[in-house]
Length: 198
View 1 (spheres, helix red, strand yellow):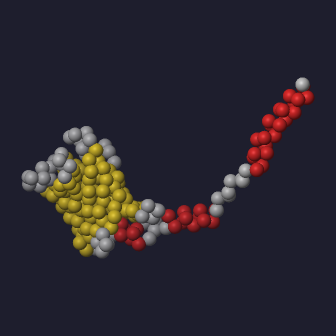
View 2 (cartoon, one colour):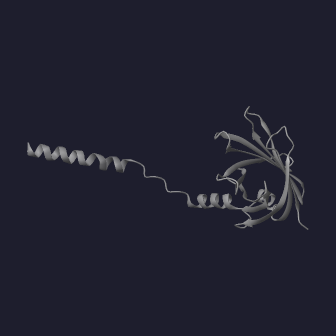
């Protein structure tokens, strides 16, 4: 009886070992392919030259609609943009005045090689959130249309936002922004025209 129990125990212990030897070992990662993919993902290209056009010092004017059916508020200010990490990103700082108080906003522009999309983030001293948008260029390459979600402070609900950046020349661009009204319709919220300082 004791011998039978020992034999059964030995058999049970041998099963996992036999299974482990029979299973194919996991394939080793192709390090060369991995390094090539990472280098491709991290290499600045033509799209990074597009966002690189922001680099420099600018003046801007804004028309802003709190009520799409009413007249816009008008204000102006300056923008300074610098390249980051070898031109992979561009960081911009916008300054001006909003409703009688100093205004400052910070944007980051990028192009994600892997996702195949332009990216933009925005923060400013008038809120506490981070706006994140993804963009697609027009066929002629003169504009990029961005879309994203933001929180509406009035309703407390998430709403869709849209921004179209159009290059008027190498030294001037227009930013047209839209937000979703209570009926779900996209309406103009802001138009910025920026001109490079000479």
